[in-house]
Length: 107
Length: 107
DNA sequence: CAAATGCGTAAGTCCACGCTAACCTATTCG
DNA sequence: CGAATAGGTTAGCGTGGACTTACGCATTTG
Image (cartoon, rainbow over all chains, first blue to last red; front, top):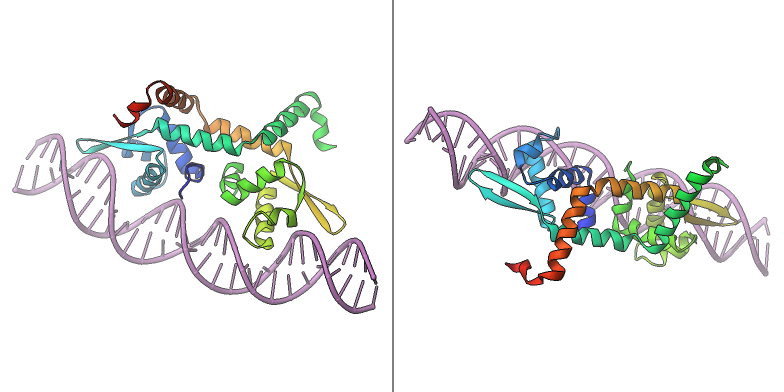
């Protein structure tokens, strides 16, 4: 699970990152948003931490997890590297066709 | 493997998409870039096709795979939806700190 | 101190996934 | 037609990953 891209792609972890993006949260607070058990969330957080995307700060008997800006920046770089110029052009093409000639989707 | 994000995250498939972004290619051409066997590549292509990211066109005994612009656009939308405003701000913050105060990374 | 709270860890299960080997189909070419 | 080429399909294997249950450790609180 080395790269940040794969770590962030998993649906639960994607959601965790979004939740943490709004500010630090404890494991319990995060776990409330999921049907999975707290240990499961804890393990997902460990994966994200291993990828350098989040970090934890001890505070009494709580552990406040928060996003690591540098890690998120690296994830962004990975995504951008994947999103090559060619893919970008394809999207622009698809968008143009969808907005100006929507019926051609089925031609 | 429903969503395009998860389908595209796998390293081999990420590479396949990049290769196909430069233009249609046959399975054999694609397989040359990997150490895995051709059936493995074929299965990865099937996953990408299932996610609506690529499609195949028969041409004699060849099958030319190409990227589906609309699928790529949807992938882009998924990424953008994940990449919330908060994450964007965090990256901007990290970039600013890295370029103006690089030593603070270790403070 | 004892109970309760917040979390991490360990152990074990289950299944999806990535892969290979073997086989089958379709097409081209001698 | 028979051989060769291109590629999809299947079966089966091994591993990793996501999950739960149970437990252990620290910290707060009565």
